[in-house]
Amino acid sequence: MNSILCSEHDARATDLRRRLDEFYNTTQNYQSFEGPNDKPEFWDPIRRDIQAKLAAKRRVRVLEFGAGYTGFRRYLGELANSVDFDVQDVTARHLDYLKTQARNVHVGDVREIRQTYDVIFSTFVWEHITTPAEVLDHLLKLLDAGGTLFIAAPRYDFPFYLSPSVRHYSLPRRLALSMWLPWQRLSVLLGAKPKFYIHVDPAVLHVPWFRDADAIHWASWWDLKKYISSRRGEGFSIRRLRVPVSGAARKVWEKYLLLFVRIDRAAAAAPVHAGVTPA
Image (cartoon, rainbow, N blue to C red):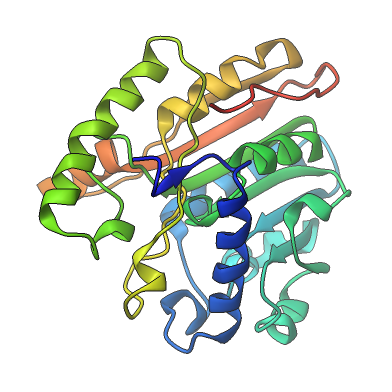
């Protein structure tokens, strides 16, 4: 499977990032770009965390990475008056709108940001990143002591469940991949380094866009858990968050196919160093 999957240090991941950025800058058919998004079920825990932090300080610094056409400031309501809200995205196509929403707008790689924050979050961006371990390292460095990082994304480590980015492949090829991948996930559970797999040949480069045709980082709870657990000595901890849902199908999705985590940095945190190198 090495022909379609790689680590973030592979030159193919760099080329993929370039091609995806071109797509995001030019496409006219991308749902997240059609209007302000609204994700209260994921933003509610973030709002509660901001309120808790405001009990100890006058203002809270918040960064949304991969903001797109964010509606987060509107969602905060009056609470936004106590928040210094910054945003980052890879495309400038929403720059004018984002300037009305945020204190600072950074267009480009999130690893270029140097400001520190009390809260950092993303909703359904993690699966589109080609350098997840490096981005995670940098976001942890941007967290102030006592800070919190929230990540919500699809989860692609449930046995035989594949990212929609492979739907352009033949059925036999998808079956072979679905049988091979669980063994790789199991190896992480048994002690191997996190994989942080990048899919270098996604459907979005071959067919008209559909939801998650560009989900090129096959996000895994086990990768994140192993990565953060290796950094407990620096004051980091991780736990999964639950989303209230109803209906059998939604409950299966929420329990097995959704990655929603909170990563905390201890109030008396040790210096942040490099983390585990992904396999």
